Image (cartoon, rainbow, N blue to C red; front, side):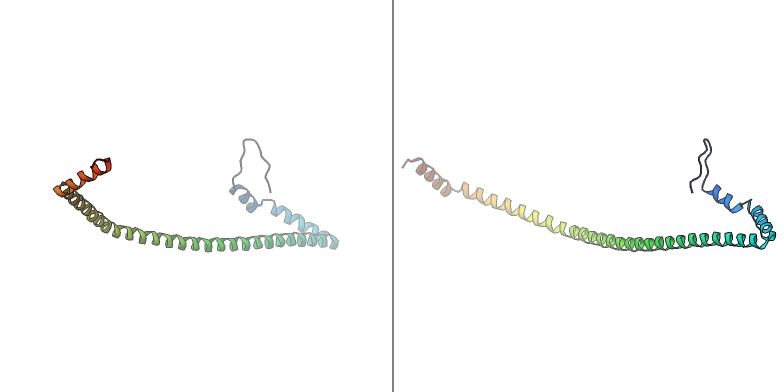
Length: 153
């Protein structure tokens, strides 16, 4: 039910509920119904039928609300299940990430040692090549090969 809007006046959610719970007119309605029922049997039957119709409407509304609450409970249960699954998946991914991070951490010193060893081997090979190139026999052979390729014999 949409309440009419009045400029400059705003109802909170609490105020309509308090108004309905207070129901100041209920005593007047009950007195009118008692007076109608005491008037004659036909009027009493009409009052009873009106109350039965009101009760049927209220019971129907309660059943609709109950069905809606069951649907909401099912939806909440499904969401909780999905949340549990998502949390479990998140935990599995986090555990895998932690495992990979620890593997990387343990691998880093070995990689650094391997690179250091490769660097020392490269410098060692460079020194050997420098020694070979500075040897008199290599210089002589290199001189002869350059002359041969220039076409000078």
